[in-house]
Image 1 (cartoon, helix red, strand yellow):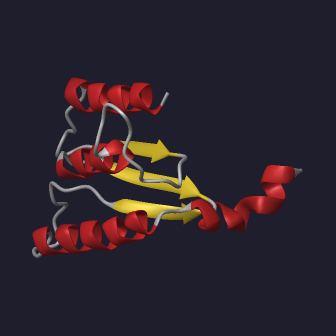
Image 2: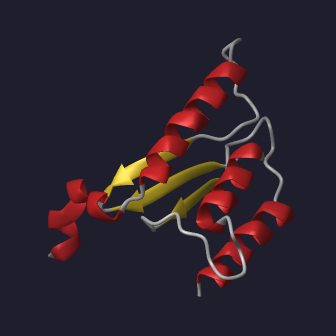
Length: 111
């Protein structure tokens, strides 16, 4: 099942090119794992890296106990890459990654 989602993410990256002057496209991914899969050795992490390289913002939404440390490391790496690229204050070409902790929304989610 993950491979189908990987494929759809990658299709979106191919089919849509962000407008440098327009709003940055966003992928919201509700997963905590960053595991590889049978047919995609880089899994969701590889898809996210490709999206960031192409100027997409990505939000990973997950509960902390199920969130891979790989996402937190990637969040820091992406922030550093975007910061280095935006030295003049203009919007750079690289996307930003944000890990959203669903624990903060637990009450609303279980009502």
